[in-house]
Image (cartoon, chains in turn red, green):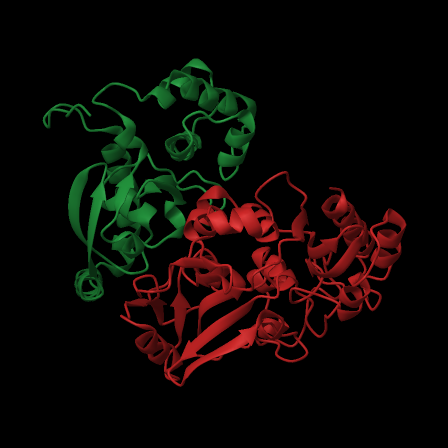
Length: 326
Length: 203
């Protein structure tokens, strides 16, 4: 790796200030599982890394029935999936966390870093001066695009690689963002951006802004949730596609629900139309089939990835059947 | 580990190292003989300026080091501490050969910075040995033939050690999951899983 300075701020304010200097590139550094890969591949060549790990107050998990779950951004993925409240109440999040990466990476990677990770597109990671790196062409359009997006793409066709982000979207999570100016809260659905809005970033964070906490609202007793990840290897792989759902059920009726999809778009994806149609839906396999057929209607697959559409639709149907079975 | 008497034979590693620098040195000397000393001095001065102190406990022994921020934990373990049991294969946090325990948890040492381990406790494959006595996991790998070429084995054993520390009596599924971050290109997976289950049985 090329040389960089290692800055050790004592608090968020110092960290934010270090990151917002325009005269040299200083990048926020937490678990490092993504950033060190980017540096090794020379996608990023920062002058300094700002180590967030020694900042106090960012690695706790709190749960209360009124407030729900509050997760410090530095909480490790393995730490979060082992938390009692996550295991007992937020199955969708637990499953997504356990299917992320490998045991070692889950001991290293943080939840905040997981949400802010860069795309895995092989042109972006490889030796290609692509659009996202300031070039003038997306090599995926006419290249190997089996794993690229089917919806929300253009002019760049990445998919967002996070599993937990898809689960958190289905849970209506929001994040706290801190900077020298203060803090603000942003719903996770408004946190991620599409290439058409900003080709160089996957989220709204400006230099100097830091995600400090992730908040998940409490779920009612009658809520069930789950996550299905489709990957080509049996373990340790990014999602080809994934589906998350939370459903509030009363008897034979879904009171309301949320579905979210990974591996299909440049950001964790959800469709308001689908969530609306879940409201009041009777629990019946035919209903789930009809609903699933409506998913990703606006998709425009590239020449190698149309297979993702039936895959996602079938996985949603399977998940709905599973979650309503008992 | 047994100490070799200094006067006896050169170790294989020292021999290879000496041989490598000899070849590189003779090529370089022809070209830049005069520039070399100054360049070396400047490089060394720059290196020292960029170093940061690092406190580390490795296999129960305390170290005070001074390292460049861009060096990985694996590099420091192998190069500075000469604990070469930890292997670097992909150097991208993907294959698991460099697995060590950091405060008791398995991590890829090639994919964290040495400075990230400041104040923490590291266990490498060398730390499992009790003198010349093999660790139960190492014995199980020998007994069950959990090794083909053996290069991924130190990482496999450290991942297994982390797994057994958390879950001393894992089911086969737990072992499959716990060992999923370690690749073996020989494909010795069934024997590796058997080895871990064998070691768990003994506890």
